[in-house]
Structures are given as structure tokens and as C-alpha cells.
Length: 250
Image 1 (cartoon, rainbow, N blue to C red):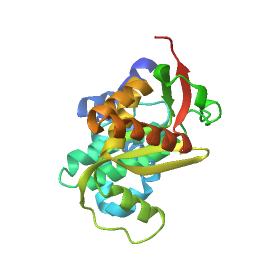
Image 2: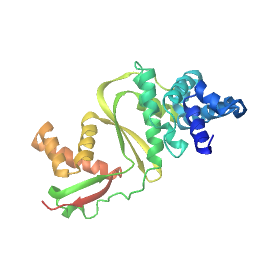
Image 3: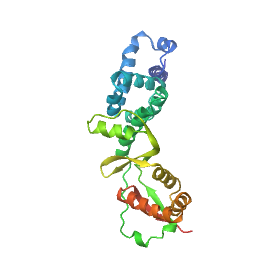
Image 4: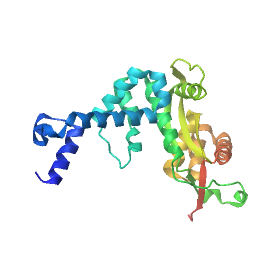
């Protein structure tokens, strides 16, 4: 057997072991040792990426979810750090009636990835008074991540992070959104109300501040919509969510 074929068969066997592959590789390969090491490393990767979720779920439940994820999703990146991607989707399939679990998993992963996101200097307020806002395109921080919130997972994460007794998981009374980003050297989580969450989604799609104003006016009326656009802009600047403003000609 050529080395390339041996490597291919061995890689395929680690991900999806079958009897024909095992026979081709032969008993001298001691396949069980490699399979155990492979799975243990992936479980360890998930445990390292989700320590708070693991504590919230319990050891046995987390291990069961990790094994389910490993069986369905072989590594896809050049580094094991990327293996944590999508674990919240595995939890959504395994625990469809407990959205607090997959939202907590999303939060923990989003904070980790925000911490290592590309650097971008925040925009300051200096010189913004003379800006032509009708032609302004706002660039959001590359660390920004957004997700709809349906449960109190933000409160659960905050309590676990502070090593306080977490509340029981429950559904939110009103729709909201999770906002995760990095400010300086700190990854941050905030729960936004439904309108701000939708406004951030709108801005991420379009970038135009004028279009955002029009979008808010359509929902709150001209006076309140324009005022809210200014309030949100100031809030996002102070939070260092805006990392660039381009002026385009119309």
C-alpha cells in the first residue's frame, strides 16, 4: 500500500471507523489506541472551549453532547481551536426544548472568538460634528457577533462567570438580542432590546447611517426615529463598536 493511501485510510478511519478500513490497515496498526486518543483530544478541546457550559450542564450530559458532536462533525480547521465552532447547533439538536443550553454555548464561543478577532481602532467623536451623515457608511468592529436572544442565558453566563449561583433557565418575556464584541483587550457581552438588535443587523447589512435613520423613522416616527438614531450612534461610539466611517459620494 502506498503511503498516501495509508494516510488517507487512516484519516478516514479516525473520523468514521469501518471494518473494511480496519482490515486494510491491519492489526499491527493498534487502531484502538489512536481512536481513543483522537476522541479524547476532541473532548478535551470542547471542555477547554466551554468550561462554564460544562459546569452548567454537568459532566455526564456535557460528555454525551461532546461525543454526539464528535460523531457528527470531524475537525474542519487547521487548528483544534476551530473545533468548537457549531457546538451550539449540536446542542440545539440534542436538547430542542432547552434553548438556554445552546444560547449559553453560543455566548461562550462568541466571547472566545471575539477575543482573538482582528484588531481595529475605534472611532472617536473628534471631528464627527462636520461629517456629512447623509453619505456616511459605518464600519462595525470585526469582533462584533450578534444573535437573537430567547432565554436568560446572559444572566446565567454572568452568574457563572462571577461564580455565583446561576438562575434557572427560562424564556424571556420579550424578544432581545445578544451583542458580543471586544473592547480593548476585553471581550464583552450585552443583551440588547429587540429594536437595538434589529438596528445593528440593519447597519451590518447596509452600513449607511442615513438608511438606518430611515429604518428607525419607519418604526418610530420621524422625531423619535431620528432622535433614537443619534442615541444609538453615541452609545455604539462609546462602546467602541464603530471602527470606521467612510464618506461616499451620492
